[in-house]
Every structure is written in structure tokens, then in C-alpha cells.
Length: 214
Image: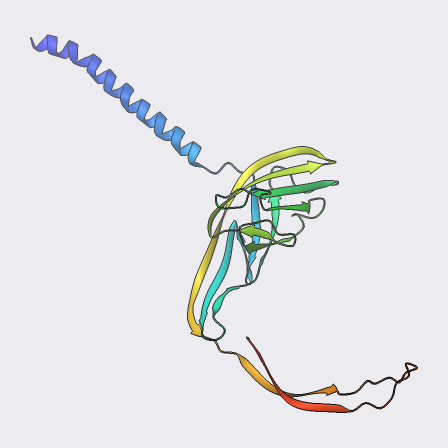
């Protein structure tokens, strides 16, 4: 009986070994697929440093006669580069922001020269959910992009990348109007005669207060 148990135990040992090996293969495959596959990235200028695929803003809330929300800076300067296809003659890159929540007709996009130096022409990221002509709209959180690199109107590389948009809350502060008193004068008579020639005008002056939000 002892000899029989030894014989029947070997297949069980092999089965366990095969199962463990299969688990390791599955985990290894998952680890590989979890690695970022994009060849491209954004180089973003955040204050005095450059970040990769990270766009940072600050938010200040105001209350009072000049209530509102202010984001700073207004836009963040960035450039695009692909390690697979560097800048070269007659090349351009078109990038679309296809993040959920963006207006889709059209998606926000930027079309930049990619023909010299180490990066594309620079562009400005700005918070928003629709296409702008002077800046590239992004939303808070993870943003998804599709890109195409063209050479003489022929697509030579296309792919996808993601970038994180973070907003730091600076707090809530009172903000009031700034007012100043001025003297404004207006003509009370016609300053030209019947032939259209200038003549001395009578003026009336009065105090005026002008207010503005800082």
C-alpha cells in the first residue's frame, strides 16, 4: 500500500508544478501588458522646472464684490516628442484630446511643426472642454490623447498617450473692487462752425468714480 501511494502521488506533484508555472506565466504576461507602450510624451514647463506628462495649475476662490474662481497660470507651455520618430524635415504632429467630457465636434486638437530641434513647436495647455484656436484644452485628472506624425502629408507614426492634470487649491479669499475718482469733461456745444472749421468749445466737467476688479 505504501508503494501504491508513492506511485499515485507523482502525477499530483507534476500537476501542482504545472499549475504554479502557469500562474507565473499569467502574472508575467500581465506585468508586461501593464507597462506603458507609448513612444511619445509631453514636456511641460511647470513654474521653473520641466515635467513629463504632468500639467499643473493652481486654483484660488474669491468672495465679495469681485467673486470668482481664478486659475494660474492661465496656460502651461509644453512641447511634444516621440522617441521613435524624432523631429525631421517636412514633419508636423497633430494631437487630439479624446478625454471623456470633451466636446467632440471637433475634439480639442493642436497642429504643430515637428521639423527641427529636439521637440515640436511649443503650445499652451489650458483648462477647458472645447477646441480653442490659441491653446490646447485639458480637463482635471487623466487626459487621453491620440497623435499622428506626418511627413509631407503622409502619416509615419501614430499612437496614444496620457497626461495628468493636477489642480492645487490655494484657498478662499475676499476680493473687493478697486475704485478711483476722476474728473471727466464733455463739450457742451458744437466745436465746428457751419463750414466745418474748429472753434472754441465750452466744456462741462463733473466728478466720476470708476471701479474695477483687480
